[in-house]
Image 1 (cartoon, rainbow, N blue to C red):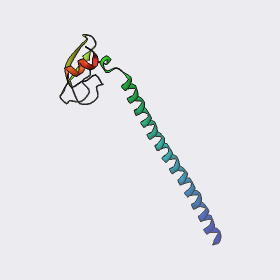
Image 2: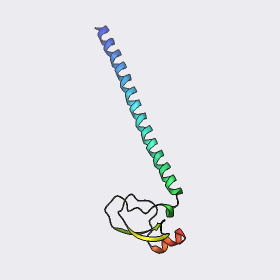
Image 3: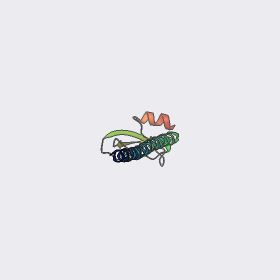
Image 4: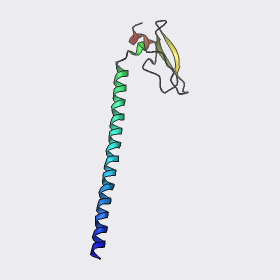
Amino acid sequence: MAIVESTYLTLTREATYEIHQVLLIHCCLAKMVAAFALFLLVVISYSEARIDPCKQPIKAGMCLGYFPKWGMNQETGQCEEFIYGGCGGNMNQFDSKEQCELLCGR
């Protein structure tokens, strides 16, 4: 009877160890993925912040909202009104023509 109990205990310890190893790997992998996603967000935000908003194209964005904005048109060199949809787009969007002209130097 003692042999059966000790074998059962050994198998249970080995199984527990393997389960802990699997959980540890999944936990570390999830943390690595989250850290990488955060890193990408920081890099993208930093790279967009360095681009001159006045040199970006006017983009309405992907959503269907209705937000009147002003943006610098590189072809005409003038600030033009457009409708921003509420998401997407870029930094070339200003609340007024005056703000657009002040920041874009026209």
